[in-house]
Length: 319
Image (tube, rainbow, N blue to C red):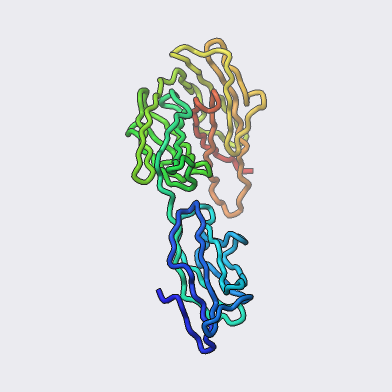
């Protein structure tokens, strides 16, 4: 790279540094000197700018800074990667009082911190299969000094009968990311986490879900201002589970009595409640047909680990 530009007035800006590369956890230090007729110029203001939004000058956390040369005609600036993001860009420098006098662009790059180790910890194990219940795994990426690596991409894969969320993601400021796993069947599930060329495996277990929520009565259709009954059983290991609270949530245009929002099963695990439709449609002089809508009813137990959702078609009457 030609680090000097000579103009008619013989002032030049010379980069002291060559192209530089650092990992995102470190700063890049670069310097420039201002020369006129072979003399170093002091107290000369120089404008520095960066063309990558993921970079900033450490002194003011901005992509532009103005600094003056010292007695030796030199200036140094410190550049960081904002958010510890790998990136590449150019540094530009010109005189403040004559922006035509400038140095050629200087290329710099921040690279990802190499992953030395990847650690997997089971946050939760032995979740129920065939339910919304889930196991969790906390993955942590470390550098060679044992520090967590921020913004490191980690991918996750599990056996075909299981699902993982997210399938890939970025670590937090401590180098950690949590994955949630659900399984369609009881037994072991193998999770593979990979960061760069390092992969680790975690084995977790899923157990049979002892509960079963069975809906035995449900209205498929409700007309305006009409009501219907929803009923069913909660079983544990095939036996009705008594005296447990069932939570109910309603979709749009459906109304539930307050007393039924948290109901208790009877001695046989049976529950029932009434639901009321408030959906209606006004008279249309243009004879627009009445439009039906669908709304949902959610029934859950144990903070959503046991959950059933059904849909009701709401058909309006005209008024």
